[in-house]
Image (cartoon, rainbow, N blue to C red):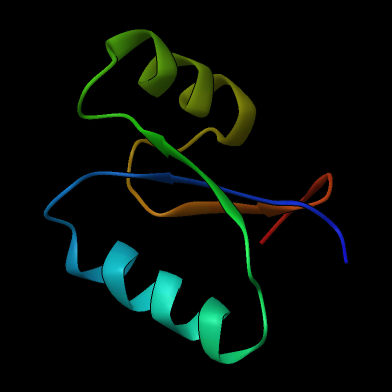
Length: 64
């Protein structure tokens, strides 16, 4: 299975639901990057995706 990376914040209901959906689909490990704790990570997320909202999910190298 390809690695899953998700940019999230602590209180985002969409992030919570996305993690639950991935778990239902059999994803056992998510590399969760909390952008509310680290502004540099939020900037990196914006550079990668062109978006400021969360969740931003990568499966392997594919942004979904």
